[in-house]
Length: 218
Image 1 (tube, one colour):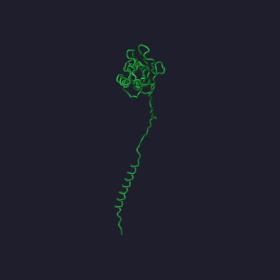
Image 2 (tube, rainbow, N blue to C red):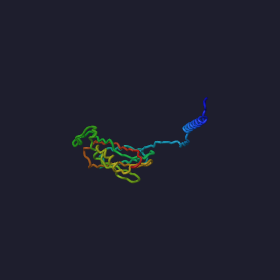
Image 3 (cartoon, one colour):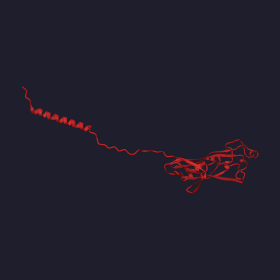
Image 4 (tube, helix red, strand yellow):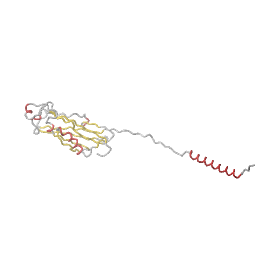
């Protein structure tokens, strides 16, 4: 005959009931979602700015090449050309200037030149003597103030001098959007600067402007 201990059954039942409740509570805590709120700003947009330069003569005329014919017709030669450089883009730019591809050409020799010049090839690129006898001056006008920034000849080996002097002597090369500067390229010589060695010689070169994007400074 079995004797059932009611107290033992009751205590086990209570303990098991607490365990079930505890497991249920842990399961509820692990599945409960956290509160959150999401806000969205207006649409973001990135637009690339523009860097654009126009080079023209004063009064809106189209810039033309520098051409000087029949050098030596008068007792001296001198002249100049002015360009208006505008930043027509939306970003600030740093202006660079240079004279590249200087080509002094012999163009052969007539009898008087042949007596004093031993380089008489035709065309004789690099053999001409005219460029070394032409003095050039570059002036920058900004905010109504003119400053001489370059002094060099048109000798073939002078090409790098233009860029070097521009960088060294122009303290502020920045042109803001809508801004402009004037650059004047002047040249001169006289009949005492050369002799028969330059007869029929010619000099060719490229004037180069570059507008480089900047984020500040000069």
